[in-house]
Length: 140
Image (cartoon, rainbow, N blue to C red):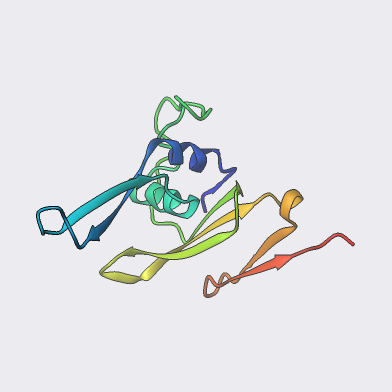
């Protein structure tokens, strides 16, 4: 499964924006107006984009250090993974993403993990059903 140190996810967050639409009821002319705002995606949303792109590090080697391969790009996803984990994230988050709207039998569990040293958080993943349990360790 793809497992990254999070640099590719943080880098992608800098390069893409997500839009949100909201409607206001009263316009000066009496009609409705649409407001569009743009924001940086969450780490989970950026990981979803990487799956959609089919590439673990689309900005490498330009902005994230990667080693070019002369025959093929090792960062290309050749299949839909069951698990995609990114470490050193700002917070724990997880989502189960179907490979397509038509095929809910093939899913990928996306997990963003914060630094264990900073948070004391770890994850247990059930490989049979892809369910996740967050563990918190406290220093006493």
